[in-house]
Image (cartoon, rainbow, N blue to C red; front, side, top):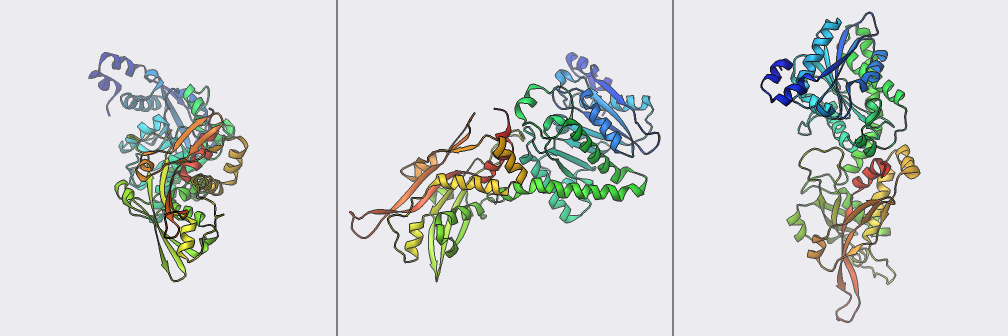
Length: 487
């Protein structure tokens, strides 16, 4: 990648001075013997290299390896960029050599923005592995095992900047890779630190954005650093230790991390699966909502659902087909997926809304030859939004649920916005707004009506109900992250 001098030679004079401002602090090993390994730290934005000294020391304490650390800093405005990182890495290697580190084993460790940029150095032959703290590989990389070197992805459960709902995507990739080879648990692990937040991978004063975006942690800084030290130590020991007697224990620990992290990630995967099927695939959430509307007839219906593209959805209608004693209801769904131009992990990762076209209970009763009574309750989209929150809370871990109920700002469900015809319903967006009271959610509803009997003065009954709703996944994101952030 070239030295800092060669890099700066072709840049603007301002950039030359920026390159020469780089600093490296060397943390020498605490062990007299063992396999030498050097960790090169790239800090997060607005953090200094020195703020990772306690993290590095925790790794040294936890590891049987002879761990060196190079803490890079002095970046322009304390923001690591691809322009300066090559020079920082070269300076770190030089200073490590001068301090007495003779091994060729270098590991990149990047936090937050530093990790985002560091991942591109995985192809550099000097790196034997990469550790990403509150950072992740490119979203377009569909398999972690295709990354050229072993990579550890560390998530924090209460991270308000690199959301757990973004990190769960990396865990899902790991699950797929494990089905191909169990070695993925050791080579490309994704580990979640419970009760920790974004800033606790470092130490010292946090920048204003970190303070504003992150919920309060539930574990101490010392506990987080100790956990980080153990995870990184076991990860590195698994493929770098020449003492093969240490490897089985390290692998067992990585297996345990995989299982324990799954307990945090799996609720998100389960709720995400309720609507994530793509066009022309099923939408399980539509089935749940339709069964809820059917009430005590839910065990006598069979729901067929499909997610559609916008134009096909507009022209589609729900319908009922009676097959012997089973009422088959065909429903349609439209999931409004996030359309971020770039991967921004601080933003909600879930679809904000899902549009459903469903059949009402009176329509189901009539299809079954029953007479709907006048006291049948009117269908409510608000009730389906309440159901979304209930499903989210039921799926959440007990600790997450109790945390939300104890100190999270609630979701406040407002009365439905009622529209009179289909085009207006399609054009009207549900309202979501946040204030000190919590997240306010207002669905958009439309009911289609059918005359009862053959004369126009007879009363009408509801036949279908169209609802634009919050998704259970958005509700779960609120429960896990947003409700706990400072307002």
